[in-house]
Image (cartoon, rainbow, N blue to C red; front, side, top):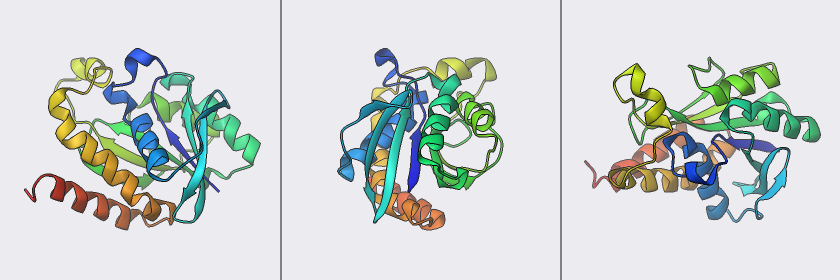
Length: 195
């Protein structure tokens, strides 16, 4: 059993924030793979389904980003899951918009959702699907950037990215991170007209 965690903020007015791309990715996966409806559990919203023959629990913590680990830890304790079964989907400033990188472990790089998960789980050794949102170029503008909404011009890459991640999700479930990244990159290349 795998636990896929989308990181974001629960406030309805924040639904289109760049910081909520983790929620958006999980929503798209849940729809594409016919997951159960979302229901309140573990200080979050939980949906269950199968991806590539693997049972996947999808969790969107409703604790706000800074306390995401509370929700994740509650689900992990209930299902008795190892940290290795967890993958977090989150926004990544250090990747250009539309780029995706998968890694296991590492630092939180200033991401409060990851920092909270590290603290509550006692380990950073879970998977991360890093979804590029780009950097505003100035450290002083980072907060406004991540808490700002995606603009109309972002749709050209955001919707194809979410679709590509959902399409390639069975490779992620099969622990084939390199193949997952390759398939997403090929899909994004095609969506950009091969440019």
